[in-house]
Image (tube, rainbow, N blue to C red; front, side, top):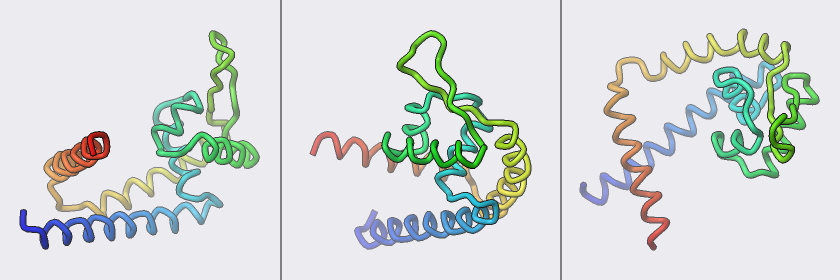
Length: 144
């Protein structure tokens, strides 16, 4: 790929990502959430109870940020912390009934909105190509 095309692709990708993030930010703000809080609730909504340390890795948060987000969502009544019965070092986050009701209300409209943004695109190819770029970027970090 020619250098100009590469730089253009990066710019387009970053701008598209920012535009999608702006849409999500606007959507979830109506419910008193920020995008990070929404991503944590969305993970719990789809995957069930999760170790807090695992959530941070899955939604790309540092452990300090994860603690802050869990504290905020707990204060809002959307999740609770639960001790792991087999390992005292592990704490799980779980949706409360209020958190589940909120996500049941928010998520269908969010999913529809995201489907509209990607309508008509060949997502299988796009996903494969973006994964390839991501893996190459990860590999270049480790060896350079």
